[in-house]
Length: 270
Image (spheres, rainbow, N blue to C red):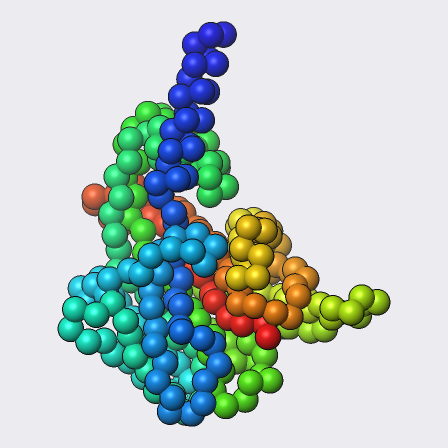
């Protein structure tokens, strides 16, 4: 019994240290989400939590896609300058900034790997590792990033659901609809419906986390339904981030046992 308590305490302490030292969210942060046509858009890649984090250096060999897709699917590369982490864009129409990375590798001792899986709501992978007799094996993971940011050009009243579109990311979050919700309060709320797809198919039971710049300490945690959709009500203020993670057995990667995909979509609801 004491041994079990000790093991649980050790794992909990590892979980806490892992949470503090490893902020997982990766997102695209334009300097704002609404612009005039041909106005310079400064784009940063960010790593942290709840819109608080550090700028990620532009690592060209790891970039698979970094581009802007407008309303008629025209693609414009997000250009960068030497030794600057920023990307730059001038657009004439509203559209979606898209980022996709190549694989990164991440090998963790089993305690830290389990702590990460618990933190991200991926306990089913702990069960699968147990079934494979890998509970105390090193967590050999390959991960890639799939991020979108929705920006408006000229039409500041255009909602994100009228701009967002599928752009072919392996794991992709799509804003399906943003509709007003009747309320007796002075603050009109909106209902946001988003969907998550993996390799173009809806994915069920995926944990999705939603954060807002107005109240970043408040997280909305949801799970996708059979159609891959989530829904939540939101005040029509501030910038929003929707994130999710999918992990599966890596069958075609020699150096990794697990392959994960980290997706995010950022937009304004103002």
